[in-house]
Structure formats: C-alpha cells, structure tokens
Image (cartoon, rainbow over all chains, first blue to last red; front, side, top):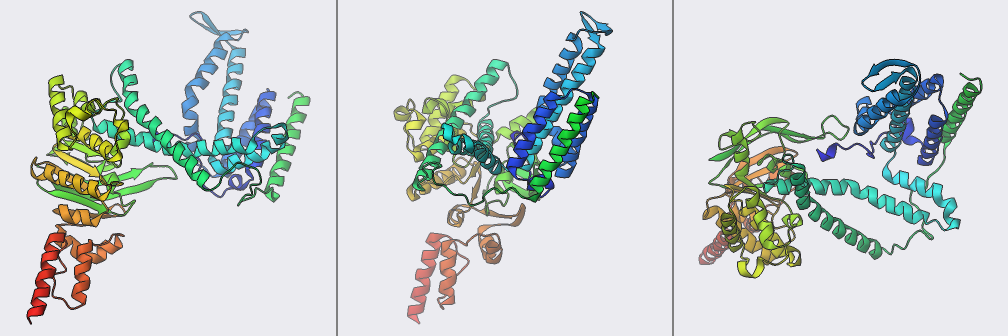
Length: 267
Length: 287
C-alpha cells in the first residue's frame, strides 16, 4: 500500500550510471533539462528521447519501474496535452463542442508531453541510481562555493539527509499506526469526504508525536557525539571525479555540439 | 473454536528488487482454549504471521479461517470474523491520539457503532481490567501518563472491543520487571477467566515458559516446532538454531544434571524447578 511509492527511491546496482560521481550526474541532469527546454524541433526531441532510452537501458533498471515513476503524473501529462490540443490557434482539424482541435495544437501538445515525460524519467533515473546520501553529499559539494556568501551549505545538506533518511521511517510508522487503528475498527476506505478526513486524526496525531519524539532523540544523539556543524569536518568517503566521469562529460559535450549544429542548421 | 492458517505464504514488495518472502507455506491451528506463544528471532516472520490473523495483511497464497470463515472472503461475515481477533501491536502506546483516556478507549467501541451507554460500560470494564481507576483517569490526557500507564490505556482500547482472540506482539517490551509481571498476569487471567484465546509473540523464553501451553518456533518464515512447552523446550538444538535461549530454569537444571544432581532437565516452570531441586538435594543427602 504505502510501500509502493517509488519517487525518490534508490535501487542499488553496479551499472555505469550507478558508478558515476553524483556531482557529475546532477550537473549533467541540469544541462539535460536546459537542453529539453531550449530545443523545439522533432529531430532534436528524437535525439533526446533516444539518449534517455539509452541511459535507462545502461542503468539496468526494469522498464516497469521507470513507467511506474510516471504513474503519479500521468493525469497531469494528459491534461496538459488536452489543453494544448484545444487552445492553440491554427488550422482546425476537428471541432468538438466549443473547442477546435488544431494541427498546431496536436504538435504543441505532443512536444509538451514528451518534455514532461523526459523530465520525469531523467530525474527518476538520478534518484534511482544515486543513494540519498551520495546525493546530498554532491549537493553540499556543489553548493560549497557559495559558502563565502554566507550560504550554510553543510547545514542544508544535513537537513536534506535527515529529511530523506526519515521518509521511509515515517512511512513505516504511518503504516503501523494505520494498522493499529484499523484493528480498532477504524475504516479509511469508505464514507463521505468529511468522514474520511476525520479518519486522518487518529493517524496524524500519533504520527506527529512520534516525529517530534524521533527528532528530539536524534538531536540528543547528535549532540552526544559532539556534532557542531560543518566547520572542520572531514569525510569518510570523499567524492572523486574519475575516468568515467570525464568520459561522461566528453560524451555530453559532443552530444551538445551535435544538438547545437542541428539547431543552427534549422532542422 | 479455532483459527486455522492454511498454507499461508506472504511476500513483501513483490516484483521489485526488494522482494522478500516473509512466510513460506505456514500451516497451523490456534485453539481458543490454548495460550499460544509464537517465538522466533527478529525477522523470522512472526509479526508478519500475526498480522494475517485479523486481515491486516492478506496472504499472497493460502487462507486464514477464523472459526470456519475465510476472513479475506468477500461475504459480510468475513468482516465479523476479522473483528473476533483483537490485536495489540508492539509499543501500543504510540497509537494513542485522543484528548482523554475515556475517548481513546472508546474509539474502538464507537467504531463498532454501539450505543453510548454500552460504550461507557465497556470502557469501565476495560479500565478495571487494566487496573486504571475509572473516576480518576477517565478525563486525564493519555499523554500525561507514565509509559506503563499509557500502555495499559492502549491495551484497554483493544480489550474494549471484546474480541474472542487477542494477539499481543511483544506486549512487555520496555516495561520494568514489575510492570511486566503485572501485565503478564493480567493476560493470563484474560485467558483463564474470560476464556479469550491468547496469542503472545515474544522472544522472552522465560515469559513464554510461565504462560503458554502451546509454543510455536519460527525461523526464516517457517514453523520449525509446534508443540506443548515440555516437548518444545527439549528441542534445545532447534532453539539454538532459531537464535533463542532456553528458559533460565531449564538451563539451570541442565547444568545441575551435568554436575551429577538428580534433577529433571525437562522442567521449565520456576516453582516446579525449585521444588525439583530441593527434592534432589534431599535425595542426595539421604544417601
């Protein structure tokens, strides 16, 4: 039930994508997203889609898993597509009630949908192949140049680590509380909206109490180990840019040049 | 009058890389007249098993019958059958949420849509059972109570449902020895006087030895031993394999026997054990 959530989940593995430095993955993802928004020709989109497909295959994750990550946003994608289909002015293909469906609308709608799908797939790919810890380490490392402007990079990363670390714990806790209340006859799956909202109280109250208790215990444990923020802290595992990262950057650069040439030549 | 578990298998997160089989074709019968203890190491599947008893988890394969009715069936009586089994989770005090002790214990009975007079009656009865004074505690916030009292309120909340079977998952975890003794005594009373079928999940062999008349060992999702306590504790090898210790009294008697004292190492009950040792010492002196 609750354990079926895939967003933000990490699947351990040893593929090429798993071995890349998390910083490389984040930077390349940002560039990729930029490319998705800058490009608008069918050929360029074909190339991006092919690249995404290649990355998914090289990650050795099951296609089903990737499709599942799209599931929560399926309706948004469909809705966006329909809006674009109906509201773009141009040559009318057909008329349904007050809406006229246009060829331009169809094109535009498809573009936007592909954009959204690619965005979700690529971001999922990052979280599927990178452990949350590696991800926050990478963010800290990428944000550290801004430290001199007063940005608390380490603290931000620590906050994210703690938040990510407690997502599964709290999901488990919710599951347990729901089961306990179900055993006492609570019914979460029927009744009017008001009744269902009322049903949330027996879950949310114990959940909040337990979250505060855990936060308190964690703070105590950190203090007991003399945690005092980022200054002078060293790491057990230092992130290192290695050979495959340079190869990845080079490949991305070549791909980028290719896309730029396509764009200039107007394809 | 029994719960029958028929070839039940359960898999967590099927069809993902995290797929894990927690139960493998478990079959057993829980008699209402018996005090059943389920013991096993962490991760042996005992918590997963007991969650099948009132339909919180549905078996991937197999079926669970409460008094002859499949509790995962579609018919209306399946729901009634599920309600016959009350469940007390580990650290049950973590599920308290109401403003007053009364309201929290009344949550279950109110969900059963009972008349308010009946609800009050049941709350009173349940509070008396767990030794909480009704007049003193009914208006108190459950969050201002001590840990042991909170646990008693939570257990009263399940008892107020008046189930025919009561499943308790490690009910004594985190209690002091006194609180533990009191609670176990109450549970035993519930079995003997009210005739409720009790299933106790535990890894404390001494508790189990004092109370249970049927012991089920679990290891890696399978039942390895299902017997009365005397036979069960004889299987010391299987106990060790399951990562459990024999009760302290059995361990003591086994060592005394090795030292040459004529005691019966099959005894696990503390009072019987003491009598047995005294007798053996007398016997040794007289010759």
